[in-house]
Image (cartoon, rainbow, N blue to C red):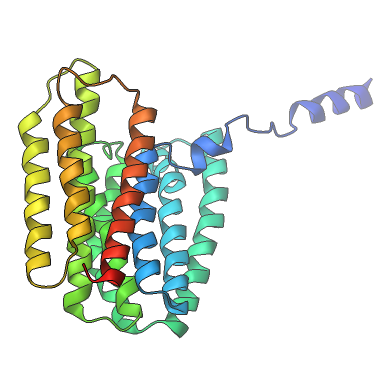
Length: 278
């Protein structure tokens, strides 16, 4: 009888495997977040392909992927809880941090040190975003705008790794920021409109007009492309029609996928404009 009781007690103490879907803890669910990551990287790698830029991209992708599991780890620690998802998040955080570490070590040996300058400049924004994630406030306007500006810095790093001037790298940073920030403002207002909440046509319009003005200014000083200006004009019209009463209703997922497609087109316009000198 004692042996049976011991077996029963042992069975009760066996660890229970977490049923938390790893994907929900490991990967960002927002389609726009993937666009923010890959649009500047795509343009940067095509404009300035280097081994150092490749390692920098690995580091950036790894660091980006760390954000989702880190959000759960810090959030649970801050609330004094250790949930089943916490262990899952810690495991994925280790995997992604390892990827970032490989990219960091490789870039140290293959990329110019000045290519890290844009990332250092963007670091305070990244730290602020981590804190907002832990506080469950990352969906607010300011964190999303800072995320867009910080991720835009990656194209500057990749071009510097290829020996570009600081002026050119800054122009590329501004070019990608002129795409991502208006997108954030438009999507936020579009989603509010779809949910029948208060929204602002003026904010989205002003952001797109300001972005177009920046791109025109860069073009006039020889650091931009007419192709990118044309795409920015299309995005401006998209903003106007998308916030009108004649719009086609969309889910958040549909809107996110469409914005990723627009982002790829924008990035390719930057690349083609660079190589065609137009």
